[in-house]
Image (tube, rainbow, N blue to C red; front, side):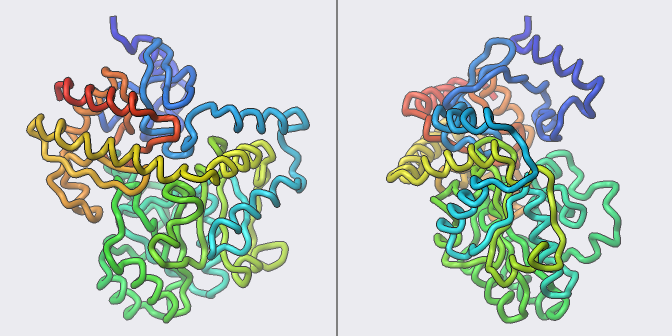
Length: 426
């Protein structure tokens, strides 16, 4: 009898009524060649599936669950709000509170527009940049994923890379002709692009730390070159921090790298596990959004009180002293301890990490951009993933994703993970 018997049955039923059986492509486990597990509950650092298996979770809902699953303080805040209603489509004081917390945490953000997803945050930022500059062209970097917006779904990472379709049918060529693709971490190409298109570039959008081709850190001077070029050419610099916002430090990584964005896209952690997104930036830009300006953006569930309450509780807890240094220690210990056991399997490996996010690349490295990430042995990763799943360790079902640790991961969890790697056959 398969230890995933119930999951297999549920997946077969799901495929009858849901395209591919899942509501987001990477969940289908196609990249690792197995059937997805179906989860029944989660608590702390652990997932429990419908077959009764328990896993140490290093995916954490793709990043949001930095405090672990079902955190009591977050659930208490949500329950308190829910009894008074779940959606109004009318302003609440909670929206202002969350916006104020974000503004207080990120120096480049003076005003915030709340939306319902990271994709919507990117849509808003791109439209705002184009509307404010009167220009059409956007620079994005190969392997960076900015949601499934038509003009951004070009050479994207994450699920698009995993499925081998970095561009998607249904995206009009007239949309993507305004998207300029450049290699990540190539400062020279940034300068050349601005030299060629200087008065046509509305914005540059970049993940300051890439997380959707696996974790790839910015090279020395890369982000500063983008900032300098945008300033010189009156273009808008957009940081997509849907993953990195409040993950590496309290607020943004902008302070870490000494580069301020004009617009910042947020999501994931600021909702504490509930669907949310935000676009924030300088008043001169943000005030161009309707109703104060002419650039239109709207959303029925934007600023939903339940999502906002979860975000408030999460950010309050993350403001506690020592949270981020502790997360960094846990992740550092795990990554340093993983290197040797994996190498002992005769598998060349490169582990990229910053703070509490990391990727294990089956690749001799270095991994510095999309092209080098694609040199990874995806078949080896698939075997590794399956071996870890059987050992009770849940990793993202794709080589090209980030792993995360939470405040609920303990030394015992780390030790169990390392032991599982040593014993595994892959």
